[in-house]
Image 1 (cartoon, rainbow over the protein chains, first blue to last red):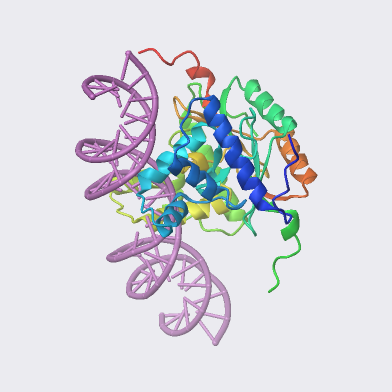
Image 2 (cartoon, each protein chain N blue to C red):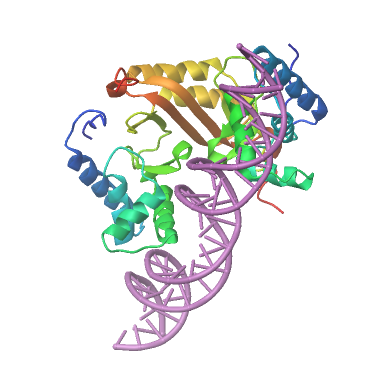
Length: 163
Length: 163
DNA sequence: CAAAATTTGCAACATTATAACATTTGCAGG
DNA sequence: CCTGCAAATGTTATAATGTTGCAAATTTTG
């Protein structure tokens, strides 16, 4: 597996997109899931940047390209993509972002820049372990972890507060 | 400072409520913030249980007791209570819960039972440290952490799946 | 091919949150 | 006291996000 580009830095983003689509196709094939044109297009739209995209943004873009879909169409595609681990939902933003580790079993941490909006997904074992230990200490059975960190990415630090 | 009751266990909940209100009054006095009747009542409603309460639930309860408020009234009270650290917002539920550590500087972890809805707030230093270390490794400047763990609380484990 | 299951279309609606502006209240200085 | 400002609340409308229910089309399966 190749190294992934840091989203903050300039990079050939088309590589991110095509990698994500290829991975998605492979994952769906393995699980006998149908990556239909709508689902694939929604995934592609979400991957158009490293900023999370709202459901209604997706809806608008589909509309702009001639496919006038209704909200359920988009939400169903999103549900599918979530179910197969191809995207993540960012609760604190009511928005969705492509999964950078599709196919790998992982717990994600999201670093969300409040300035540029870019999100970096991490899978840090020490964090996961600490969380699971804390839950275990309370005899709580963990099913799902939402960990979203808001702040300033390296590129935006020092760039704020002056016109 | 006295020990806090575990929300899952039966406890004299009135103690939780009055403690929360007393703390809130003290915190507001110290900061010259006005804990007006509406704000105090919203806080009290939120503390009526250890389950997060939606803004429109609050609205409905205010209505039921004769104070027919509009959404902005509730959201403004919530903003105030959030600002002074008297409540927390649970992003994954779009709901609000009383802060169990008001006045103490802390980063919270929420254990949310999907079965009974009860939320336990923790402030675990190992978790906070691990998260901050992970962010630091990416040169990310942390401002806010959303950590919400969904699963089964001790009381609800084994109680599910059979009528 | 026919039946069954999955996916999509579509209309209506439910829930959550905010904008904009008017009115009232609390309070400090004259 | 009272007056004038700032903070808080009231009011109306609307924006943003998400769901339900059912019909039509498509795909899979026997």
